[in-house]
Image (tube, rainbow, N blue to C red; front, top):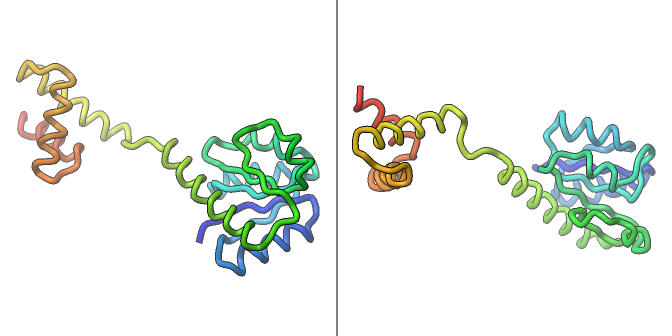
Length: 178
């Protein structure tokens, strides 16, 4: 089950939100009361979603959002008049009071957004894998007189023809050159 941070000044509010999310199997919750606790939990537990009030004990939600990694999505749950004060466009908003269904649906969407942000920010290949591909391209360029684009296309086509990953094809080309 995905984890979400639930952060409110009021521990009663945080516990009510946690009960709704956990009873509906939407997410397991980590409760926080301060922005500092949220920052530490996000970095330590690699959590990609925060549900919080407009203001925490030590800082406002908008200032906290700016301190979070780009892979972390935030949903602020507050009265409509306070939500209108938020200037940060990337913060999701939900007007309180809220129904159980709206809350769980919004948190599911928030978790999905957090996963997408994490995938988008994660490098597709390790530096070792990229070095193999670059080495195979250089070898093809040197031995076959291909341009870099042609060498890359050759690697892609060969990979598809053999149902292999690009890295495996690059390794095969480098091994055959030895």
